[in-house]
Length: 108
Image (tube, rainbow, N blue to C red):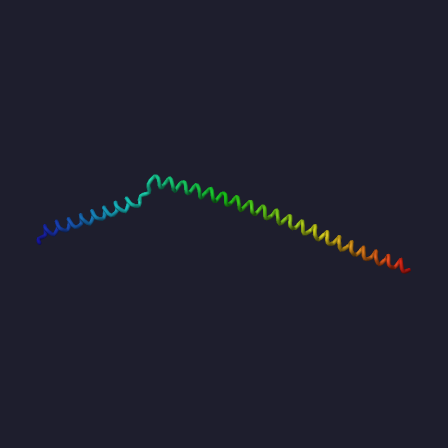
């Protein structure tokens, strides 16, 4: 093989390698390209996700405010219970003192 044949064979091999590389790139690009329908679907999914996140945030805020309200009601109820128990304790003590006084008056 002389020099001219070697150059022609090398050029042919390089052209074939270039053509195969270009074809592989085109094939890969063709299969990975996103269509308009897919973009529309992706946009719809993004909107749905955004709406779901907003609803979740609103639900979390509602739960937090409801929890604070219920905690407040619970503390008020506990305070009222303590006051009622103190009043009952005082009433029992007074009733016991009155019984003791009446018994002393009846005996004396």
